[in-house]
Image (cartoon, rainbow, N blue to C red; front, side, top):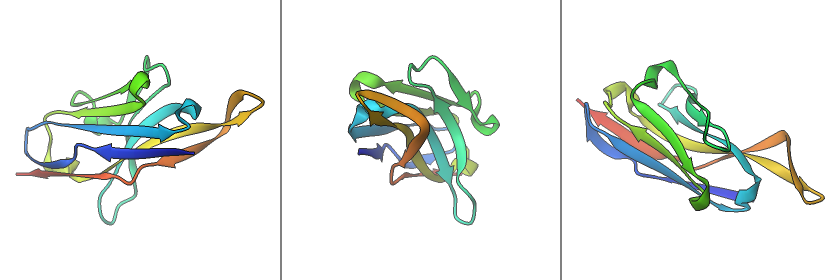
Length: 127
């Protein structure tokens, strides 16, 4: 099984920056694509950014394009989210996810993959 632990959240002023980290432990070889989601009270979780296994392709929600950057260091089993030009509406709990394949006869299969979630880290942007 894989465990994900987010860190780096906190209180920041409008226009400031934060860097979130998500460290994976356990059977990290099963991990393929990874993502960041966020959620505010009363709203559903929304996708912020995602990145494929190699890190060579990324995808961003329109509301963070040009401000946030997702990256990963597979050697450290760590996912990052660099957040710049933060706005009050970025205030949320940020969650890391990983798509984890199933090990069968020495190979990992991702259809279907299991989505693993971290417990989240709070980001608060004050105006």
